[in-house]
Length: 402
Image (cartoon, rainbow, N blue to C red; front, side, top):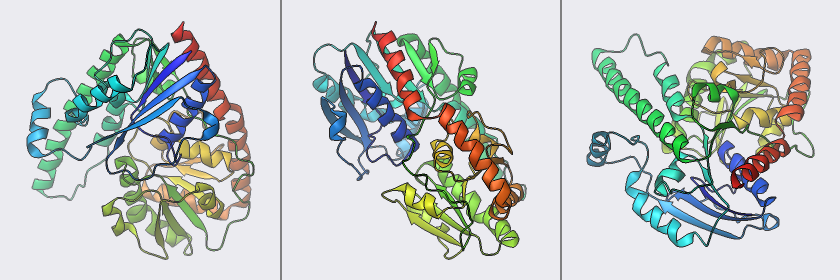
């Protein structure tokens, strides 16, 4: 069996949830036969590791695109088009589609697209045996963003700007839904991360492929709280939901947490954006940046916090913390799609005072920490190991190829 994977990412190093998902998918597809990987990446990206030799991919190519925010003229043109979402960098499509045609070698038993952008930029190839892993539902991400309360004390101009943004966001949400339906009519299977997303996207041929994580040889978590107590938020800060969550954590949650636990420290780990520098304020808040191995940061962490206010899919960072025996505090949205219960596997809280209180509890209550960690790790072993995800990829791939 031969598979061509066209991905809107390149998975090495595996330092984000989407890259872990893509790498797990490639490992599974290699169990079925030869795999060619065509990866679409941003021109600004610099961190490329070679594919693992033991994976044995047949051929690999990267295609760089310009994914910078559009100029006013290009944005106006995008708005004028009544079909495609504004965020899809369509001006790259001719070059990407041409490169895909040059790269594709012979007949494939299966075409596997990772994320919607891969399918669109490859010129929506009309192939009989195709899977599109949607990963996130962009319309749900926008819906959650619109729901974030505004500043009641903002001036008239700020309210007008918010209203204008909301109008554009509603149109963008509509376009994503149209695009998802179009994809579902053209491919055999469309995949989402959770049953919750499957309920939200009633598409033809929809399947659920959960996120997973490889069990570590030695979990990095510790039972005792460190000195100083450390709260970890990790994820690329160039991803807007993470950037918003980090700002919310630093500006609204952390000051309240320091009232409850004065020695508490916050570490922000992940690829930083130019605007992230404003968040750095040691010793209370340290902007660490990207690290080669997240396990070193998990070993320092007493709590992993997921203060996301909008997003979609499921958070691999929560599964990762479960695997490493580090207790978790999350917003309800941050943990959605995972089979978790508040007070049993993690603590859920949705506003700044409640998030601060939840973090403080886990920095001071040793018995609660131990209980959450034990049950969360058991859930990880039962539901979210990478081996289970690979088995499901193999099942889907073979069914579609037939």
